[in-house]
Length: 316
Length: 316
Image (cartoon, rainbow over all chains, first blue to last red; front, side, top):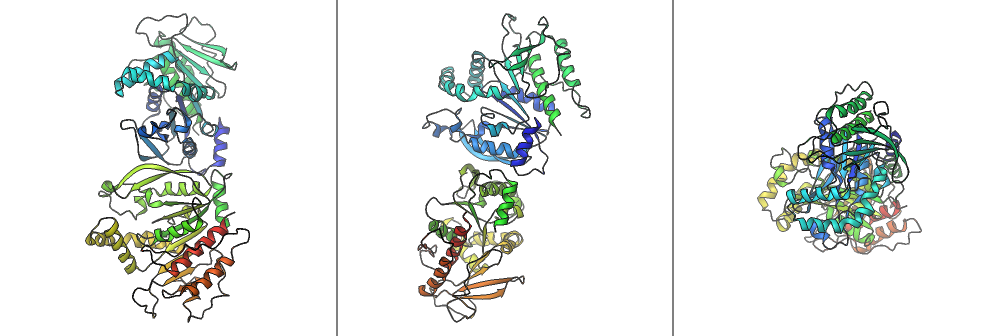
């Protein structure tokens, strides 16, 4: 959406610098943001992408939060205006001194200098919360797993990697739920691409099969045209379906079944990559689709490739 | 200098917010910046002035500096581009998340939110180092004591308040001298007002008399007209002298002798205050002129009042 950047350019200093392409990856805690980001950054190549997490803009440290009547999901728990300011600066190629929240100690520590490369990947809980923040992005993604699956992911991660007990994680999920509903999930409406990993109804999968996925391609941006290779015919393992979103808006829904063979996903990947504007000469990345546990997911690979396609297309 | 702010307004976001009046107080370590600032902030009244120190924009902490071939005075020791960015943002009424250098531990710690009030006082070693930084200020002050006096002040402060030995402070002064000459002192040329506390040649003062001062009023801004109450007649204890700066530029030099009685300084203070544009209705502040040791200095009082006058005049 080039008009967005023009708007930003008019209102911000640094118009003379090279403007990076800005990607937002929004979603609740443990929705899969890091997994999605990792493959995208790797595909772009070393030194081409700057990744930041906007959860560093916490207003309170862990001790101070005990006296605060809401969780970290609440906009008032975060310096949202500073986040907006920093996103605007990055969008115009300017460096920022980014705050840092140390998840280990729960403290706010020494800030770091962040200089934007060709691509800036901004992931976190609230990157799409305000209009000004949204205006900074060229492409926006929302990760939307069913709550039951996200809880499972969060339990697994927070117990294994962050040293919490199962009961602590469940209590925290409970405590956060009203704010998830009020502030996190509404961001889904602003995404150009919604990614939902979930079993597909009526298609039970064998144990050990990776999760199926639905990618909602909103016509808010120009996606690669997949109508030639995929039709509404849903007998295939990857198919495109013209449908309506929950709010009635028309969308393309790209379904990738967990048991899709590599050959089927290759057809889609090739169709996406062939629509990359000439002159880039970029070979199709082959490192996509790696899950957190190391397994491969065709659905993840296609989601990542779509995002990479958008990023390269938006580069001037 | 209204054209400066116009320039900033064109190139920066937030033009819609109320723009504060920006004051820079530049000068070397222990040149008297804090003493000057304190009285000005007090005169403006509680909650009207935001004071920041740009020495917080250190790139390295104390341990890291051991491996760096220059001192904290060097621009490369500081995030000068981030300082410029933050000054621009403040100049347009936007908040910043300011880095913090802890002088006690020598560490860079959790940043703080700074929201500009009507007046922003920016003091430090390098606020006038770059063109972009200078363009953010409505009024600029440089503190210019003779080196011998500044050394005395620094020895006294750093030994008493910062726990250094006399030898350590002297060694540090030596180490810093080339960078003082290269980066700090050249900022004097950009000041609308240069303040030099020093004995006046040929006028020996009795022991215990506060230092005399020379205030250089550069015609880069419109100062209050003092030609009516003060003439080139230098028999008085406060007098105005048309002269040339070291570089040949014409300036008004306001001399205030250390033994000036309160009556003489009152004449000047009244003349300054009467030239405040009507409508402000601000009574003349009576808390000015307090030195770090609690004694009163007529010269300091006049310098502070001049700055306060400029700040109030620049307020829209």
